[in-house]
Length: 441
Image (tube, rainbow, N blue to C red; front, side, top):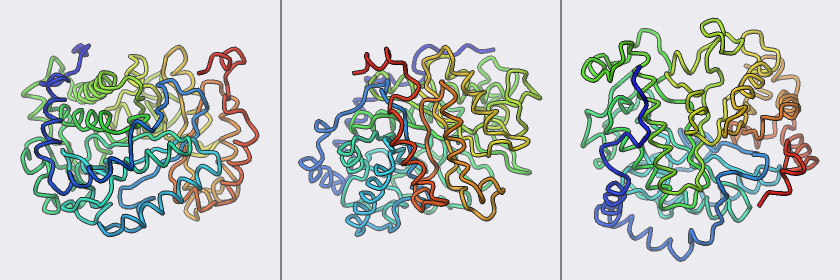
């Protein structure tokens, strides 16, 4: 088994990469974007935002705001829609604040693009309608400013490896997209383009993108979702046999090698964040099952797809090595489900964070409530409320996050009223002892 490195596994040092980023931002950034940045300076000052420490004092009450495919925001995508987008975001933030949400997980890089002013990647077409147009404002800075005014954390949510959605042609990519300069950094799987996780160059690029965000924006955290290696597709084969043969790094099993590729990426991101701004948290929201007990006695009593065996993501290693500050397993099943029981998984994850510095928040499927295609637990009863009450019986659970914002705010089965009632009638320092509360900043 190859050893994991103790320092950033990239060909460039942080200092050198910082200098390159500065050069890109100052020299390469298009004139239109520089004009936007200049206009934004007096209105959005990072110095005015108060970032939280890397050990938040209160129970995490989060909501994901998905931008890919315009799932949650923005409803209208075009350069001319800036004011409408701002108003819509303010409505979202006010609505979430009103039910007790204290953190948003805002998707800023869904497909190797940017919902912020970037000198490395093009503007997201989910924002402007095309990657060739810069918006008339900086969405991430606007969100940081507005959320912090409401005392809400901003977790910048990125997808590390995804370059396109399934079925998207590369002809739709901007001329300055990194794919144009380095098509060898990518491979295609199941009609979708992804960064090749085996290459040091792609890890360095991803870390550069994150360093750029952490340097220039007052975000409270960097957040990755559950997409590492792609979800398995029937009759599709990951095209990495040649990479494994060329540089196995001491591994004899390609599956262990793939997991190491992801481990190297996660560790490199962690080191990048800590070296750039140690007050910024690093969190990951993996698929809900790490491993099934049927293949590993330390796994959960479940039967389903797993991070370790199917996505090549060894979440427990990241927790135990202190690479991540929090984990948000997506437990999108009901209590009592025969093969994947919410309660079984909530208690299993609680055991995994014991004795570590990693905080446990639970990802909850508010989007399932009231949906006709869901089991009776979601259609006839408020399953989210049952799960929230269960969470409060497990001391290791110190937060929860709802997916996603638009279906949540439709208030299915009056879930928003229930969430507001629960949050209003409990201490924000849930699960903390009186002595711990006395020492909070």
